[in-house]
Length: 367
Image 1 (cartoon, rainbow, N blue to C red):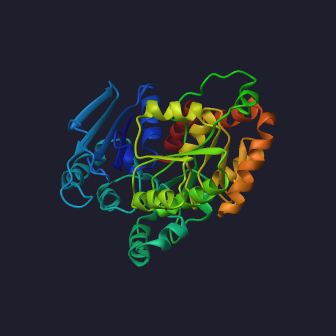
Image 2 (cartoon, helix red, strand yellow):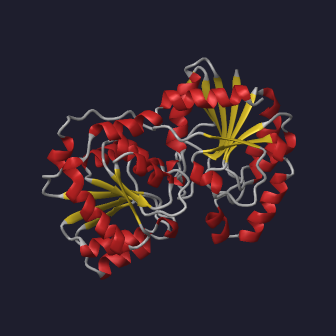
Image 3 (cartoon, one colour):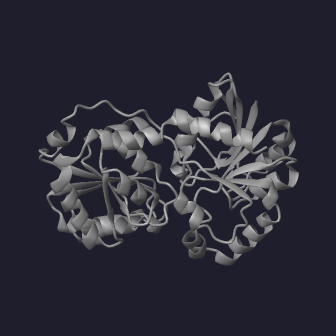
């Protein structure tokens, strides 16, 4: 069985955000089951990093990635032509993204159904924040092909909050883990509770939508915690540095980028993971935190808010620094009562083997 994947940016361009690491690991898993996977992608980098990738990389004998140079803006004309040329040579087509010319080309030239993960881009509040009318028109055009589209949403939150889309068929498939869970002892939470320096970790694109400024506001009120913020600049880095300097926050460290190995080390060293991002589609960093047995603080109404209601792996906060501070203090007080099994339950439902099997069943059942 041959699967064609079309995605505007892909591994190793992790600075662009999205589920890049998770998808790369998922495709490795799928291709180990004797499936042939080809990814068509561009060399676009939001932060203009030159990764010096070749035009084609073979990850294994069944999994290859083809990279195409950018022609102008975010568009690769060579990728457009490759989609037209290749799209009908495969049994299944999986498209990950939404608002770009590649989706329109894929729908126009594909003879079969397209499995489409919009990656949270159809969430109403995300649409309304920028270029609302243009996005509305684009969705209306895509709706013309609605019977050719099988939507794959990563959470019920993403599905019920989508705006304008005409959905014919869909499936809910959560993201799987990007890493294997670390090995820990039963007394991990009791030991961490005694740490002299308790690190609050945030990993995210540094943009207004992620509400990183609320974390800095909380840091001014919690001088006994150290806040580490890691992520590429998406327009807010200068403002954050100015806020740190203005408030003389010696308990805050901002780091623009780290390797995946360095990030894993940061998770191991951290006490709580905090990200007050609103309208988050899935948020793989929360899952990565749980894989490292680090409790999370998320915003109410998100996918992870629902997970927390069923499993004691963290707390949900309102979108304000006062409530974030309260939840950090509360989680600190409850820390020694956390249980490994609760974290393992969440890890289990996002197991890469289970998620890859769900993808395959969805493909087979809907063609």
